[in-house]
Image (cartoon, rainbow, N blue to C red; front, side, top):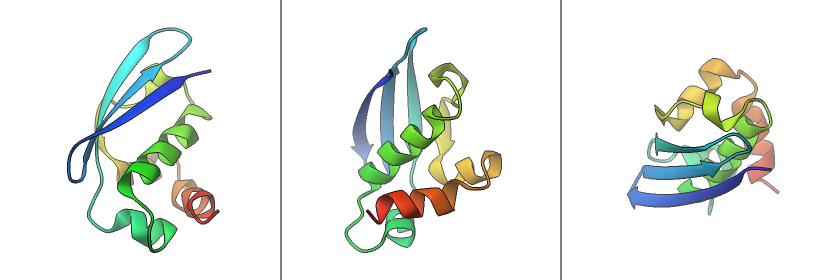
Length: 92
């Protein structure tokens, strides 16, 4: 199991630290303004979007394969079902 720590550096910019089975990794993630609310509805925080998105990624690849620096909306370029799945998860 991978342990996750999400820290907001500044509005829209997060550092995600993952301690996986093989080795720890650090990721710098940008969240476009309004994306969390667009995907999850009113009251959805950027932090929750980042957490759920990393859970989604970790279900599909090891932490060592996740890009180290990216905008969260780019996940859909690699995993076309990301937005629909994240919307479902965030609406719970």
